[in-house]
Length: 468
Picture 1: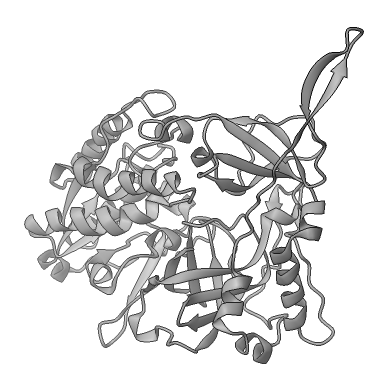
Picture 2: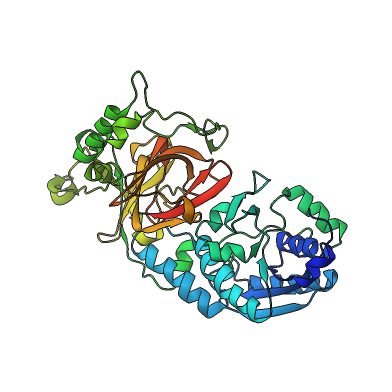
């Protein structure tokens, strides 16, 4: 933490005070360091009917935020950004889910609201910077380029949510608690007797609260009953694309190296196991990977899609031999149940399926909004849960460090994550005319179109992109 500097008083900082302990301590530290600080609470959501308890969470949050500002002794303002939030975040969510994709509203909220719409309002109040309670660190190079680094607390690092920020946005951003661990933040809040000291961390959709996602989406997306189809192992043995991808992975391996094809799971730990090691040597031969054509890479990154049809047959039942119809057994799968809309499910999802009678958990492995079908597989090691390669469309590639952007034909090794708090995974990135391809050293669980893939060099987050 920086010591108090009287020169900081010339610098005006707007703290996005949410009512939580993190932003409260961020405001406290800035005030102690001598900045001219004011707080602003933004209301981004009005409707309570989608939250789990029908609560207007923002009202309680605003009340606590105002108490915090009064305790610290800084001005407090309120701004309603609900129209911008609905247009730039919520409508985007609805649109993506309708297409069978998995968006991340928190990433969009930071890019479109906190460091855009909110920043614009703060600047009208005279702010030089906007500060938030994110657990991440910012460093400014001599030429003015901003680096964004992982937070000191490995359990709370939130760089993933900031993966779409630009240099212009970062120049206006401050992250006062990025070099502090969560327990210390709690201690500082209690020591200062802040009203938010014991407040639980917020959960759910950014500024909406904890919601039942299907209920939330049903505000705009219609419920239509469809089939849940369980995919059997036999499907993979006969699928042309799956067989080609596995053969291609074999051909890329370095001499004497073997490859696990599905994500290893440790039930006793309830987490996906990773080696936890820094970027190492790829199991794939670099020269062979670089020799792949754009078309081969695109095919290697193509998600599996299922098209299992069922035929009917007639039979006679009972003493009166009543004629009935039933589905013929299919070696590739079976109808395991029904759902209320394919758009309400995401790849890797386990809860809310209502599919019983299995020895192991059942997971969503694909959705098809056009046919309104949800495909599932039994077991943590089901082949449909794991993929090695993904593609990011050229229009969706975003470099935080624009000076380090990859050029077409370039190959680099980075660590990558595809969801918040996922341990960083070693991978090879290849920039081609038809996109940026990420080939992981190990299989990845539940890769879904619409998610953000984010890549790091050491502790620094360099860029991100939406998975195609």
